[in-house]
Amino acid sequence: MSLFYAETHEWAETEGNIATVGISDHAQHELGDIVFIELPEAGKKVVAGKFLCEVESVKAVSEIYSPVSGTIVEINEELESSPEKINENARANWICKIEFTSIPENLMTEKDYLAKQA
Amino acid sequence: MAKRTPLYDTHVALGGRIVDFAGYELPVQYETGIIAEHTAVRTKAGFFDCSHMGEFILSGKEAEKALNYLLTNNFSGMLPGKVRYSLACYENGGIVDDVLVYKVNDTRFMVVVNASNMEKDAAWFRANIRDFEVKFENISEQTALIAIQGPFSEEIVRKLTQEIPEKYYSFLENINIDGVKCIISRTGYTGEKGYEVYCPSSKAKEIYSKILEAGKEFDGIPCGLGARDTLRMEAGLPLYGHELSSEIPAGETGLSYAIKMDKSDFIGKKAIQNHEPKYSRTGGLVLDRGIAREGSLIFSGSKEVGKVTSGTHSPTLEKSIIIVRIQSEFLNSSDLAVDVRGRKLKIELCPLPFYKSSKQ
Image (cartoon, rainbow over all chains, first blue to last red; front, side):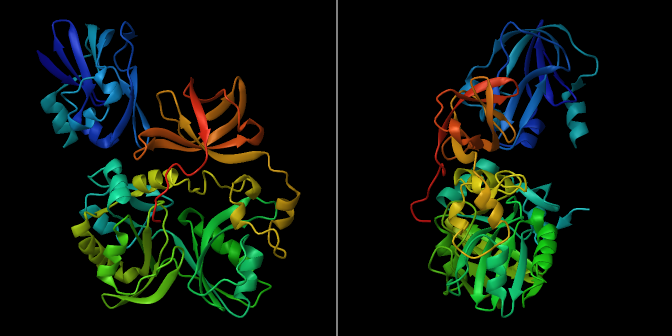
């Protein structure tokens, strides 16, 4: 199992060819109170670095980008009614699982990502 | 470069997330977050730095006469110690700003204006009072403004002074807080019971910390611009640049109570008289999942009939709320939808406000 972070503040935890994807703690903190998430659809193809879904805080809407390329195989439907769970724990409350075909080389390890935020 | 209010360092020390607003560096929220700050005002108390707002003094024999000519509301017969809301209009009926007028006495008034319009308003006031025996002073820089809002606001203010304005939209001046002379009014921009304290900028830090201290036992917390915006939206209160602008005719704002067509001439009166309002300002709920923001277009079927002037997630209602400017003939349409980035979400119009406090 490996954990990666994208420059755009998403995390991807890979196991086999499945990546579980969410946003970083830094991202949830920057967004503030999350009140809505438009979850992506299972079965949809996504491209690394491109649009995955959008989340809305009280103040504004923000786009979330896919850290990997592949096909969405599962979404975390719990977030639909309780998007604030992302604020409570951004690492535990994943957005979707993606069966990935490739992982970009520019993803960072957690250590490098956190060092960059500091 | 953006200006700072006298409380800037205090906001930073309190963990405020600073943004640029109306040319000022102000906290949009603190670590508590917008929802917690919003809820504090609805259930306990919250404290806002509104020092960016502008304050003008109009004094002299013809101060009242000048205000009656410059502004849309009527200031004749107003009692000293009262506050009155008004619009200021251009000759064409578009809106210069919305303001609060404080009557100190027959020859002295304070006018509180929006920060984003302060320079424009000052020039507009100066240009339009020329024919009156009245003196104009812009005291914005030396005046700080702190709002204390929430059901426990009165208890908190009573810990600072025994003299407090009893009635909604009234004020007292020369109130002594910690040796500083302040104006306290029973006003606010949250739809909740509340007070606003005007004090010299040089004393703002001390006064603010007294307020925070007094508020502790009631769980009062500092609140930022984010909560200020969600609170005023729930209360259905207009914000210049959103519900009001130079492009929006005064007669289409739903603020007729502040536009007195039966008084003698005032700037914009003719245009307002001759204009048949086509649009209305009203509230709406987004029924489908999603949040509509300012600028989203409203459709009846495929026809564009209006737009969202403010929109957010309402923390109190836990619903997606919008304030809209819509062609009046479509107010009763049953097929209204808002376009949110290409998705048409069903909406239902409703009267403003979305929230009304029982003891404002």
